[in-house]
Length: 235
Image 1 (cartoon, helix red, strand yellow):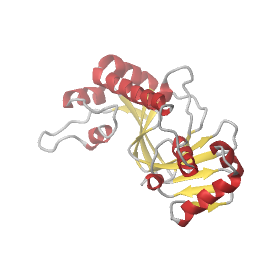
Image 2 (cartoon, rainbow, N blue to C red):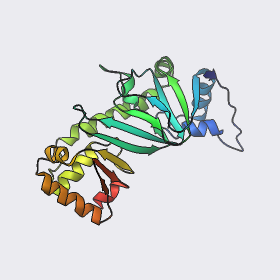
Image 3 (cartoon, one colour):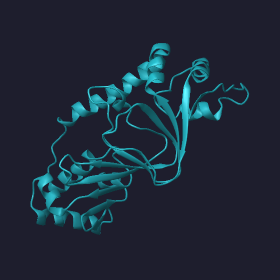
Image 4 (tube, rainbow, N blue to C red):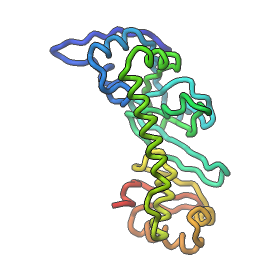
């Protein structure tokens, strides 16, 4: 459901909760109070509450609107092109769901998003985004900055220092296949496939993973590697 909202502010109290929710997201940061009032009063925002276990979008779906997670935790699944492995992550609010997928040659989601807990979203249609581009310069600039930052990060990847050991190659594989390089991850992959991906023997990869498990950095199951806290691998 979408609706127009006019949410007044009180100078003694400050911004309303809805304004504060918007300012959690980089697309709306830097807007003045006047710009926020103008935008909220003239923009159709959608609002969704979804229970745990509900699929929001599927990889390959056309992106026609922006989702802003304001409360709850999502499960994000990404599958390899040859379907030999998949990564599942847990990401918490606040979170913008792939704003880069709204435009370009292939305006489609590259991840599948599901609710892990009860979640609340603010939704903005593509038409409303285009109108805000025309009317609010800072909103347009914020969107450009998001896309530019992602492009710069991708461009730098090929120039990073190469991993020097098998341990580092395994850790690099984990981080390169995550949407966000921290938090809980579940990699569904067979040991022999991981060995192919990192260019080493299955036995040596097994030794590295068992060493990491003994240090409490991950858990090994059949066809599954659970990483409770990815950032711990790099500390």
